[in-house]
Length: 224
Image (cartoon, rainbow, N blue to C red; front, side, top):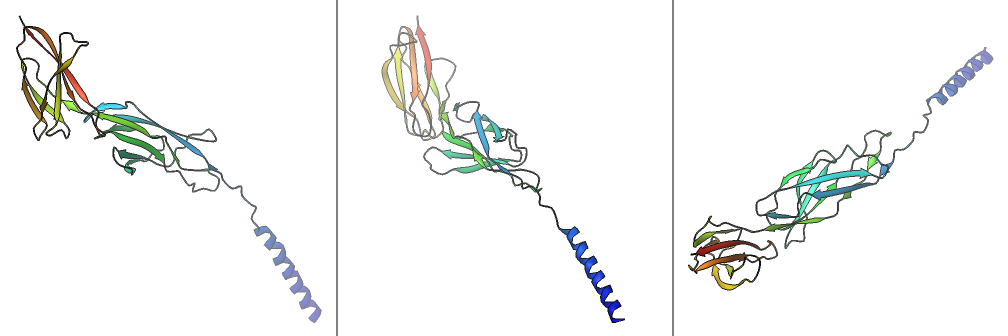
């Protein structure tokens, strides 16, 4: 009897040892983390105050595929600042940014935030940033349709500042300084031009600065 019980125990132990080898998992292939590149191109680099731009975005990867997962964020740095500020985020990797309004001369860049795969067989994607680009903003100046009384308003932020008026007998060249006038605190201006005999061309020019490009318009008067 003792020898019989021992044989049974040996067989059971052998069966358990054999079954344990079946539970060993085979190693899986690790997914890659792929390098990406981001390109952002605006449809204009000079706009008038309050105008908008569209930004075309393209995210590609080193392996030739276009990531469909992940988000991008548009960053802006206004003139005079050294800090990038997040403006908005798109839920799709290569979605464009439409009707972006720079309130002053502003640099932009688009950052692809990358993507971490949830499945071991899928690739993950690194983050990448586009080259920065700058959109310059030009001040606007309003004026009437005709006459010797010229008035309007300069926007934005042009209170108590100069508008230089020049005059010429020809439209293309030969302008000389006539006078400088000042806007009021709200950027409004008004001037009465002299009734000179003949045809005269007038240039109204607003100075630029770090935040805004200069702007100007031409005016024509004539007296028979």
